[in-house]
Length: 301
Image 1 (tube, helix red, strand yellow):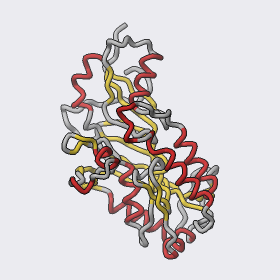
Image 2 (spheres, helix red, strand yellow):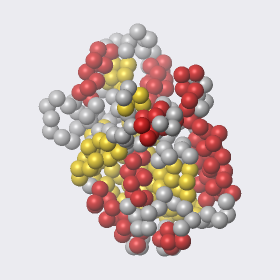
Image 3 (tube, one colour):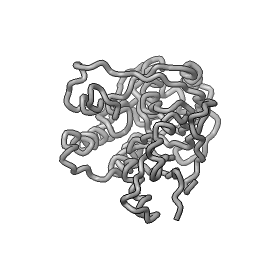
Image 4 (cartoon, helix red, strand yellow):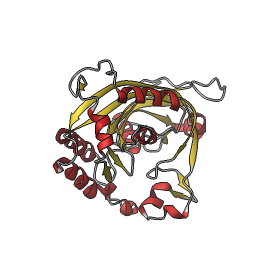
């Protein structure tokens, strides 16, 4: 059987890219001596298109790393974390000013089970529309503290876990946001929100490898406790708002970083995190001869 150069897989929430790739190897009966590599990571909490190179094409990985991506992602307002997604240590706000902004969009929002509908005309939606406009274009974004970006030979998340961030300068990356569109605002009850967060957190298989001991299974004992405290703390809002976007950006643009930045650009500033990230497309937008065009299909190409 002649193997294709690559395949585009659909990674689920909770899977690592390696787990997704190796599951496909088994499903497709690909021999273990045939190399596979993925070109472009997806966080465990993210889902969607994962590009996997096959056999000799693995040697051409660099050609695929600059491909642009499109994401559907949503941002939870009012709760932040040190990973900028649900899998981090949480922080919240009890600011009355922030509460006024959030409560101002309670009426007429789409319920969590309702279909998307027009974003209501409110102070929040107007601010978000302007933020989308301001973020579109060339932008310099810091890498998340919990990322695989290497600094002085060590992943940034290891510097973070060791408590040594003050010894290094956080690197940034030049990115291009081709488009950022606000599509929906929904309201979720705090208790249901925390239950859904717990489901996402528990979707990741337990990490027991000794080499990853410092990560302590994504610190999930502490993270679960944080979400439970949010759930039972009645001094916090009874409902929170999740804002949905579609973003097309250059390779290596972290939606987690955008999620944090969106909250920081609101007035007043509100903690925020990436609630949902789904990669829908891997493509070439820039007209460069050395970048391949990838079909976004979940089968052999």
